[in-house]
Length: 273
Length: 281
Image (cartoon, rainbow over all chains, first blue to last red):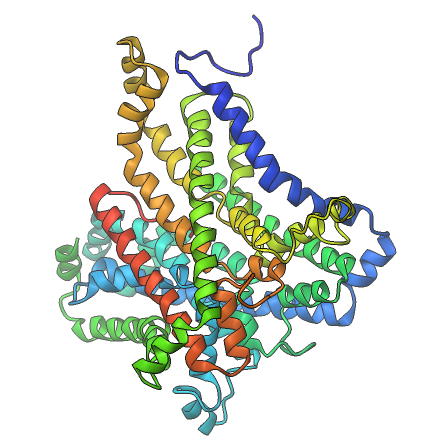
């Protein structure tokens, strides 16, 4: 039998639509993205290594990873709580709250950035009370965590919510009838069923927070070694026309995001089996 | 389900209340307070200054550029989205999964890197830089670069809405139409399009929000030339850094209105069409 790469079909337009898609994809996405790898291939290994292990760069990586991790963890806990309240409770304004959960995705990041900075600056609406307590939020890692928590807030809610909606109440009833306390039912019956969704939400939030630029640029203060995030560092290098430096750091960051995405896909695939 | 839930635990009303208050506090702190703050800051010096800040020529220029960017990004990525989903959802071929992964690529790239790749391509020291200079063509630091970067970051929106829906609908209706003598275009316009119109609109709503609000990628390629290469988010940044807070928040309030409009439109389409909510926006 002859090998064919496409199943026969009577529908028209395959060559036209696939051809156009591949053309547009190559022009807009593949060719521009390949410049990143072309550029990094032209770097000398020693230069590349020196750039990505410079103390300032390592500090930025550490800060990015740590703040993104904390923000994703906060969102995992509170995202579960919000999803829980939205599916299991009824209260006035629930539908509006449900829709407004998407605000961090719909609101341009620059707007989020200036708003949070203004609110939490030492003379801001919330910041002045915190400043009285001796807590500085704006221009510290705490502010970065705040901004990252805001922009990645919807992920866990939106991955957990549909699973919670379809959970079978029979199991919870059975658990209760067999004498389990509510807490035991939650940890042994409900949580295991939510674990894949929680993990996916956490990873998506983490990946988004890792690459975030718009909201963080305002609130971080951008001080090297202290509050300089990796995307900000790339931006600084670009502004100094240090393309090779920017490329080196960007490649490492890109590999990180792909690693996260691969982990999600692998986990989903394993859980689906 | 709720009745069952109450049936299981009749005595723990206070615990219910506790979780609800905790959730509402978190929600208020992270969503309601910032949303309120955008408008209250914008109007802090009165309506007159608010309108004055928006009508200011550089602000108007940024609004125009943002609208232009969206007006170009929507049709181009819409046509691509339709073509790609037709090829992927209606036919079976080798490498389909891989193609879907490639289409999703722009979503997994940091905004700064999305802008940077176009600097590497078109910049003065970029791969096409010397050729562009020799032919006296400027791309980086022009509105053209902003549009290209926006096209990149909004690339997958329509395709990723249409592909799963068209796959689940199958080919039966189209095959029936063709067998009954409809032409290819008739089949598409009278059979396929009505079935996917809500998903298409949904994708366009999300695409539009991102096109108008994108900051990181356009920031890299814009050069921040006032009245020329500033989109609304970039103009917000400039005003904010110049301590013109009312001006910054006035323009920001327009973007916040856009966000509210997006949320309402999105909820309406979800309600009308039973589309499952989008996780990745």
